[in-house]
Amino acid sequence: MKVIWNNQLVEREDVKIDMEDRGYQFADGLYEVIRAYNGILFTAEQHVERLFAGAKKIELILPFTREELIRLLNELIKENSIETGNIYLQITRGMSSPRNHTYPEIESTSPVFTASTTVVLRNLEMMKDGIKVITLPDMRWLHCDIKSISLLGNIMAKHEAHKKGKDEAILYRDEAVTECSASNVSIIKNKILYTHPDGNLILSGITKMVLLKVARQSGLMVKEETFTLKDLKEADEVFVSSTTMEAMPVVEIDDRLVGDGKRGPVVKLLQELYVTEIESMCGSIS
Image (cartoon, rainbow, N blue to C red; front, side, top):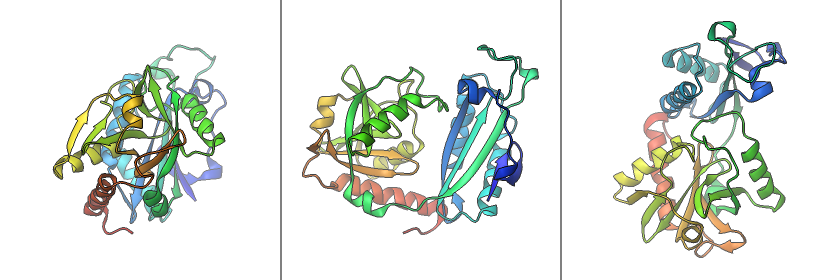
């Protein structure tokens, strides 16, 4: 299985990263996950644009253009014969010694880029039956808009859900729902879709962006505004969205059913519209 290491496709065992890499020591880096359907990357341009935007926010100069990166990623997908799966890409500021909290001078270090692929099929059963979640205070930092490799807060929340036999954790700050440990969250109330506005408190989700577009095109009213825990628990339907989960219905929150505990009609429609959007770019999927 080939991976990308900097600007080359190499065997995974050939990759060597220094122990003083700032990604390892400081989580000084960024990542993205892009989905492939029929061997074609879906919304690759949007993911790459978010990577470049994050790099600008942390003053990281990327060693490639957007076009060069997309070309490399497509080469990796083709080389590994990935039909339905994910490509994980990560870039760190690189090795800097001696260890220092401040950013090193640009000319003194070179970013380290890696990317790998995984076959991940669509979980149609879960998309129909939905997931169960818990709610937790959002204890993360205040730059959630940067897709940083520093994910300890997210991991702790996800693990808490796992310990309770649930699938995801919905996070909130001062009663205002933000997002989940590894996805965005939206609610449906009286046939209106509500989701937290983009900003520093949440990651601007690419899947969420696509879903909001197709929702508006279908005539569904969309409001990008903050909603509360009370709104969440009184919603007609709830769903989370991410690159790998697409639009995933939530059927239980903190051991209480959402609606009748089954996927609702609006979420079902959004799933269908999302598939149509995928197929317009990548061809027919099941």
